[in-house]
Image 1: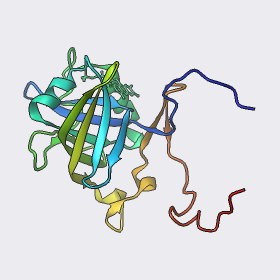
Image 2: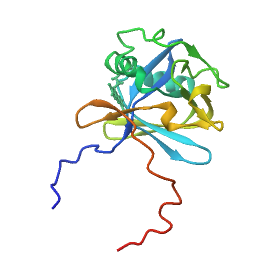
Image 3: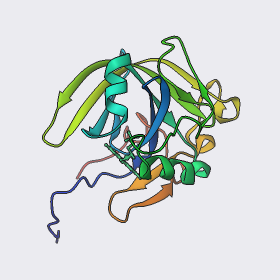
Length: 187
Ligand SMILES: Cc1cc2nc3c(=O)[nH]c(=O)nc-3n(C[C@H](O)[C@H](O)[C@H](O)COP(=O)(O)O)c2cc1C
């Protein structure tokens, strides 16, 4: 028997990422859990951002932003960027910033994986704005790679639960995708 719940954004796991943008000539990072991949080729990412954030005009002005995937060990720094707004606090020095080919999307050196994004579209939703970006480059530290690509267990990404507002780690491998279902017998 299912229990009906209120319609809340109950999706698990949610990533807790750092979105970077240059605002008023300085890097600014905010924490975002409403983040997901939307298109495979070219790879696109979408962010649900509250309209009042300091970051938003910087994304529009530069037509770029970054998605920085932190490790679980970075949880306190990530939380800091989600508590404090650039409207009141200068977050430009929280991370060591580097730039890629767009030269306007600040990326956090400390995050093991960084996605450099070109802004494609802003969609106004009821409360938030959806920022859709194309991933134009990706950067990763060597120690999170296996055979040249990001390894989720090495990355140890930070996950967020909207229910209890806590951070979690990813669990263990379950099996091979596009393979485990081959012999599955539906009832
Ligand atoms: C765990 C966590 C997840 C968050 N997820 C989002 C999100 O998905 N979208 C959003 O607009 N704000 C989110 N926030 C809130 C912003 O990070 C926060 O308001 C931040 O101070 C805005 O920074 P800015 O004003 O410098 O842009 C989250 C905060 C935390 C702590």
